[in-house]
Image (cartoon, rainbow, N blue to C red; front, side, top):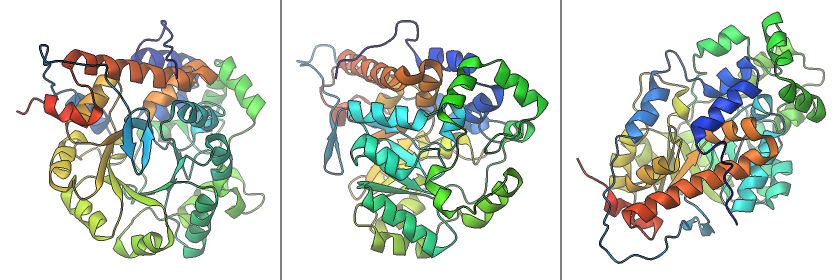
Length: 383
């Protein structure tokens, strides 16, 4: 697919700055913020950027390829779109925009249980190529029904989330009264009135809701009851006994997301999972934790030959993707970067962001003299 990068927004930071001007403050702060004092969200990116690559300028060299094989499918780049909750609150219809862009560019899109488009709709857009992330329900009946729907929608990969045993403490969201839909305080109403493009698109696509969960929600559920419903319906803490029946039931590839230690990687292997995503939920759960790049290195070194090791959290550029792959990840995922893109540029945002990241990544490979993604590790400067 031809890559086109809008020259007004040649970096993710440019898209972030534009997004901030286009969406209400409560939506931007939900997207952009971490937890507690935002220590880990800053550390994630900063420590990725401590990774250095060596260029070999005098070696023979041919045109690089970004193509990457993962779970029997050859993707056109070694990165995909991470799952994000409440996407339609950040920018109306954004899950569908990003799913279509991912499909067109042949990269994976992961749909969250708690985002604003349904499994079935995203499967239709992607012709059954989208992955699905399961936020673990408290009831086996609900868990099994959601998994059956994902299977019926031909999702090739089920991602189970282990890093939300409790809701992150996010001061900005608390101050903003963030809910689904947002609590319309006077401050929030004024924010919406100042962002006409967001408001008009919200009117066009309607009030966002948890589309995948609608069949399980009581009719007439009002805003004050929504939080209680979510607390009663989902239990984020996973353990071996909760994973085993999912592994037995799910016939496709099964991935554990949120791995931050060698111990959890070992458990995933023991339970017969196909992959892990080293992640700290984008710095939104444990402010006192490590950045993602540090455990990635040791986990990939010890277990990369036994299970597919991937990473998300903190990546914001093509060079960040190159650094992550060179450090041991076979694949990488980005979340905020794509939401900045779609919030900044609407329908064109997904295509632009993917094109930008592909262009940046290819430039790094040209510069260091690396023809294949899987050879980036040869350029890693080991400290």
